[in-house]
Length: 431
Ligand SMILES: NC(=O)c1ccc[n+]([C@@H]2O[C@H](COP(=O)([O-])OP(=O)(O)OC[C@H]3O[C@@H](n4cnc5c(N)ncnc54)[C@H](O)[C@@H]3O)[C@@H](O)[C@H]2O)c1
Image 1 (cartoon, rainbow, N blue to C red):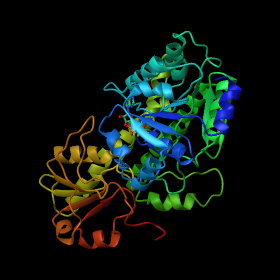
Image 2 (tube, protein in one colour):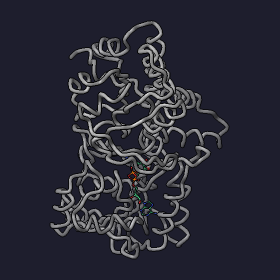
Image 3 (tube, helix red, strand yellow):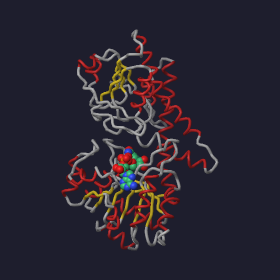
Image 4 (spheres, rainbow, N blue to C red):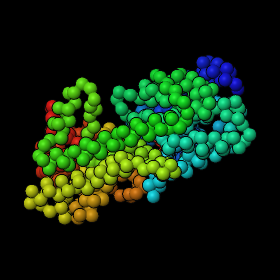
């Protein structure tokens, strides 16, 4: 398929979409294409997910079953782990994980494995877009050579681009289709085709000159957040010592109509992006003999936060004549941010670890996480404790880690002996 044929097929909604990786990012993306009338196939190696999707069921709490069911019933969406079907699609969008390994270096195994699978089934005329967050150079250095090995020429025989995913799961204001999408193709034709495709489902595309620029854009966004969160976390510790309420200060600073964007302190960083992506750049920068000092410093401060929160908990217990050793502590909120069930890198898990090391008996409550799932680092056998009057009164300390909207602040406050609040949930300055 040449450029004109591809563009015309996009306009007629006749291109078939394949999304590799049916997770927090890939699933909503696939549903968005199906909703707009594109035949869409979701691919995943996790065979447990496939029948669930095909029966219209969800395994991600904030992605409504209704949306999956509608997509399946419309006949526009199906899921499979049969990768031979990749040759049936016109556009292959890759949204697989990019975590850090045990040495905190990029774990590119998921991207490499899916690129190899794509290589196997790639046919002339197909478009491949990598969406996973990664270091600048990935598309050019990992995907391109594999596809060229087949004797295909990029921009002519196949099209290749990087387009970072900016999904913010369960953000009430923005979803997959309303967040502008940055696109960097290997050639101008690759960029043009990729933009034309995303323009069908996404509010706006932002073309940049190369895949490397697109890869770097995503990292800039997440480094900006990691560094600014570290800054307010540091200021929280400084202001606490000075007996200044950081939340009050942020609210006041926010009234400046320009030049200030509010970030908030918390118990530490969580999620698949902010604690991880910056270190992809750190790793790549080493190849160029340059260090990323801001990223390292931000990482250091943010990693320290759970320890700081526990020291506050110890002080609070102490003031109540109670030692942390043997204290009963209830952590509110297990997921890394409010109103979702994503446990990846959640600081609540670290809080449990540190408190237990100090001899506390720790339970948790989370309306989104009935049971703590095993993660790469932790494997706790713990279930969410019900938030009843009687249960709350059993604890020497209630430690709020994640401020889910479901929490009834008055009820919790009334029934808790002692609260440490890492999110200013119980004491919003302007409430
Ligand atoms: N979760 C977010 O909020 C978010 C936001 C923006 C960007 N991202 C980026 O998007 C990418 C995907 O993240 P996610 O949160 O959707 O991850 P996820 O773990 O929720 O989903 C990834 C899916 O890919 C599947 N998978 C792994 N290897 C595969 C393979 N070889 N072939 C087919 N499927 C495979 C897994 O089984 C899983 O279902 C990451 O690079 C992440 O950094 C995530």
